[in-house]
Amino acid sequence: MDYWERYTTMVCHECSHKTTDEKGNPVHYNNTNGLGHGCEASYVDKGEKYECDICYIKGIKCKAEEGYFGGIVVQVLK
Image (cartoon, rainbow, N blue to C red; front, side):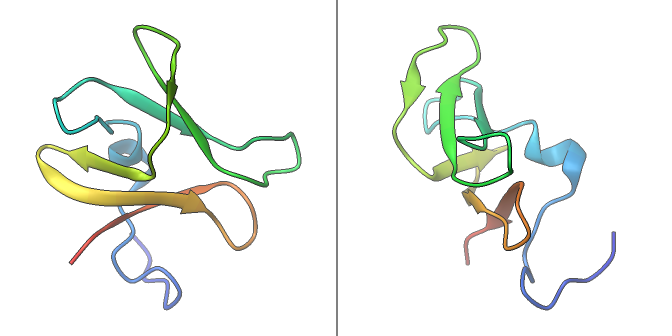
């Protein structure tokens, strides 16, 4: 994966689709509009909103946010 100075702990695209809440329930992040702005999440199985930008990938604490040029960026928290 290429190094991005703005997102030094960014996870790869494949891993960004493996996000869960603290209990291991799968969550999916997406933009709030079609132009790639905003960040919202919902539970994959239930469809209910997930009201947190903190998520986990294989037990590793991460944070999801709107990318500078749009899209969603998930980074490992240090």
